[in-house]
Length: 449
Image (cartoon, rainbow, N blue to C red; front, side, top):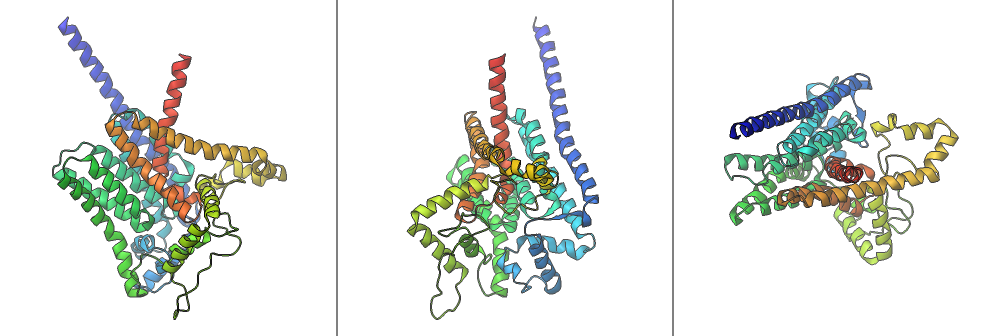
């Protein structure tokens, strides 16, 4: 009898290994298939890449760097954060003729590898059942995936978050050895890359570092994790601050925060990028004749505090704009160049005829758009709730993956309501939404069965 049980156990173990092996192959194959499709697409795009929303501005910055070097006085390198152009600079120095092909190639490779990395960490954990569907839905999400073929920071930052989440999840209950501290340094490095491209993720990096630190036993170890991640991450903004101190004599990352906040504020505007009505007033302090960016920030904050009704209205609008569809009557943001819109059925219907346009922007289109907005938020928080209930480690991962999404959402409410701002954290929101979808599917199957 004992011999029979042993043989049966071996058979089950062998079957499990085969299943794991197949899943691993799927997790490799899925990003590779998408990568192959992207390479084919690159060959059919003029120059090999599309422009993102700020593509021309980034290239203007790169031209300045090519001409004058690191301390170029090109205004756009100080107005916008210079990190992304600085990353593109070496590529342009290698080859201007193949520049767009190289950018698309590197960003697509990074996206494919980070998708595999994150889902493979799920495969080797208690969340193995999620790995296949997370890989499928991240890889073949048209807006997120095709963004790696555009000149813009959105897809690379989404890739950084997958690397960060994968490393932290694999070290949820670590042995505090040399390998662990190398992983902590890696997380700091990926955050440095993300904040170099878009500094608004600084706060997110610090909060996630603190959450990870609190998961580890021992006050000294907690301090070491938080400090190590933060110090490495701060190298990125420090580079931009040093550059601006030399070029414009200001210790700042960029000079567009106040302008951005001002666009999303005002008594008559909706909170989106296309503002209407008068701007928030802001007078220079004598003897100055112009208003600094920091002074505009203070003016906008004071206006919000002095106008609570308008603040509530704008906050509500911008909260919805963050989750709005890419097109249609309820779409709000700077995604007119979204590669997905080139093949989107809704977009094709709207452009096909007057009747098609009326359908997309009429009552039916509005209903579908609101279902999209509400559905995204519902699945996000439902997935978060399901993951938290699975156990202590899963609760930790739920907090790690929700934090960048919610904080990006709040930052958007404080600046401009723009659906483009959700792309960098879409890899994390899709992960949580997949959990909700599979949980609901399981409940329905259980009821039917």
